[in-house]
Amino acid sequence: MTDATRANVPVALTIAGSDSGGGAGIQADIRTFAFHCVHGSSVITCVTAQNTLGVTRVDALSPQAVVAQIEAVAQDMEVRATKTGMLLNQEIIAAVAEQVDIWGLTNLVVDPVMVSRTGAQLIDDDAVATLRERLIPKAAIVTPNRYEAQMLSGLEIHTLADMETAAQRIYDLGPAAVVVKGGGMSDHLRGVDVWFDGKTLETVTTVTVDTTNTHGTGCTLSAAIAANLVLGHTSPMALKLAKDYVTEALKHALSIGQGTGPVGHFFPLLPTQG
Image 1 (tube, rainbow, N blue to C red):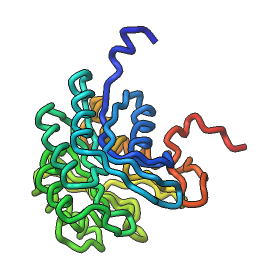
Image 2: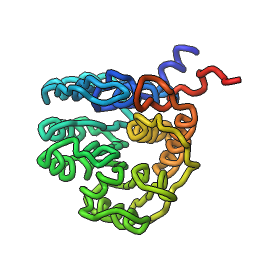
Image 3: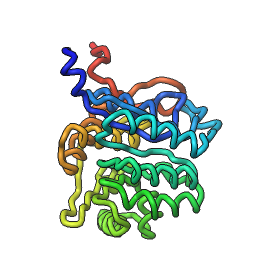
């Protein structure tokens, strides 16, 4: 690779929490960026002590520390897309939203980490309100799971029609596009996502992968969307390519640890099973 080629490697930014187990958060995002040949820069919002069995501790960074990290990256590099993950509290969310405006961070993919795939709320109501009112309206794409979509839309989601209505209601909050993810749905809707951008309402599907090692799928999808936006793809194509990537990573999920293992972000490098 020549110096000129290296100079043209595009930059993406992730603003999220650190996962000590390496399956989700900043670690998953950086791996996903690298797979797409995109340089990954990062802003850590919180440090978690976690593994495949769960989270045992979470320590938030100060909003000032988060801002300092954003400033350090944005004033030095041309950030072509940014994704947010776990922002943890109202103060950090407000600080990130302000920095998005100050630095003109475009191609913003907001993974509104509010509720786990099992329905457990992860941030308090004040933080949810700030995310809804100050950050989501700035998003190029927002990617709620079933339970997050319920909170954002005020609608119970059980059917495909519910997912479609929720996507339309979340779009009214101000993002350019919404993807309601179906990973938390059951039966034939499992893995079926709904896309709405104000004009087109459609379902996006891939094959269902039978694995229990699914840790980090939400982080990985939003990071892959951001990476594909960096590479110049349209938002609908970025979603399609991101879903294809996550599907392949699930096919090569890692059975490590005693609980739910992570997806195989670097599946081309994994040894072939004979």
